[in-house]
Amino acid sequence: MRYPLAPAGYGSTAPGLAIFARAWAKAVTGTSYLPVTPAQLEEFLEGLTVRLVEALYEEPFSLRRGYQIGADLVAAHIASAEGLGRTIEVIDLRLLRDLGLSGDDLRDRMARLLGTVAIGYARALRDRTLDEQESIRRAAMVAREQAEQALRESEARFRHQATHDPLTNLPNRALFTERLAAVFGRDGGSDRRLGVCFVDLDGFKMVNDTLGHHAGDLLLMSVAAKLRRGVGEHLVARMGGDEFVILVENTTCTDDVLKVADAALAAINEPSTVDGQELRVSASIGIVERPVSGTTPSEVMRAADITLHWAKSSGKSRWALFDPERNERELTRYALSSAMPAALERGEFCLDYQPLVSLCDGRLLGVEALVRWRHPKLGVLRPDKFIGLAEETGLIVRLGGWVLAEACRQARKWIDLSPKAPFVSVNLAVRQVRRPGLIQEVTDLLEEYHLPPGRLQLEITESAMMNGADESVGNLRTLSDLGVRIAIDDFGTGYSNLSYLRTLPVCELKVAGSFVEGLRAPAAEPASLTDERILATLVSLAHTLNLTVTAEGVETAAQADRLRAIGCDAAQGWHFGAPMSPDHVDALL
Image (cartoon, rainbow, N blue to C red):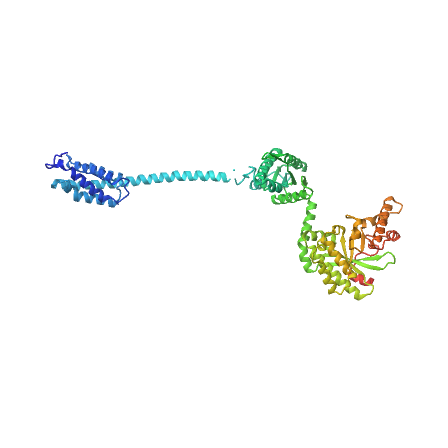
């Protein structure tokens, strides 16, 4: 190609183009990331060189090609200040020389053309930067919109999950609590009522333990579906585990919620098919139905939970209705149970003693130690108010140990006071009898108070004596061998295994007061005569086994006379003296 201003021989400059393009490529390599091979870069720059030469010789001379060349450099990713600088430098120093071109006019044009290349380069770089920024901005907007949408979807899922149980798809505890609170926040006057059924499956743990948790989950899903169908429009929620709750709004009376409870029990009792196996499960339900005014959601749920325990303790597979009076009694029992350990430490317990009198000559044979609790607020409490609690909590061992020690101390005091001092009879709980340390405990007390073993009698219930292989019988036999008196208390109310008596280390039977009660009626009455014959048989049997018999609950002279007539050895009861303080026993002696 020849140009109007080109010197002769310009058409032979093709080798010079390649040499210049190679130098240009070398100059810009490394100034920015170039996604091409070295050969491709040289080919591209050779083409730009041709366009530069064409621009130099163009008539009339125009700078527009320079702008485009600068833009093309940017488009080819030679897009850095260093890359532009090296481009200007190599073009200015080598283009005319490598192509064998010369002339002042060409140099002037070259200078002006390089300026436009730089301007076009800068404009293209600015536009590309703006485009990239716009792309980034748009991408950021899209990403933000996508993130916000994902967040909304996630929040929504966290909410079909925060308010519903994932296994059964029933409302969960949170949603139920919200709905229950809404009932209390709703206007409607003081006449509005509500009901709650607290449902717990019976024996569900056995399903998990025997068939596995997968089967347990399937069973829970089946129960949930049956409950939802069985109770209709009422809200059914899963509280967790195998517990469900039903909210019955706007009840008119207790029967409204009882019908729902019956429907729930019937639905749950229907068989469920789990992994091809038919399973049946029952449930217990605690029911609360009351006016909305005057209570709170937490009080309703507490009452429902308490009542559920009542249903469980009554035999399961049933419902129980909340009873305020029973609840008050149980609260009192709980308060007593909680206060008992500290009361024992503070010395609030004391002993009264009831005389055991010979029916033959009226002598004072012994006294039974009866524990009392001098409660600072409730006054003096009898054993029936707290002994059961002590047994339930395990405190009976400590309390019984204190009673035993105090009775031994008092027995020693009476021996020192009079040669006619009575023996002291102490009731032992089943836990005490079975304690491995019972023998050592009694032995230590006898030694500490120098108490003859025959002056201590231990009363045991029939239930604690019935198993000959049990350690309790072994303990009592050892104590009997030491000389301690052993008596069976309330004989006739337990197992009454008469043939077993001859193998037990017992010296006395205390006949239950329920038999003696019948002797208050005239002897001619059939029931009274029957009780007398039963007592006569017991006395005869006991004497055959060399056992003495003491009748409990003797309140009249007539009872004492009839007992004396059938050969009963001793008696205790209000006729012979009420439980009394140690000082009153001192006076008797």
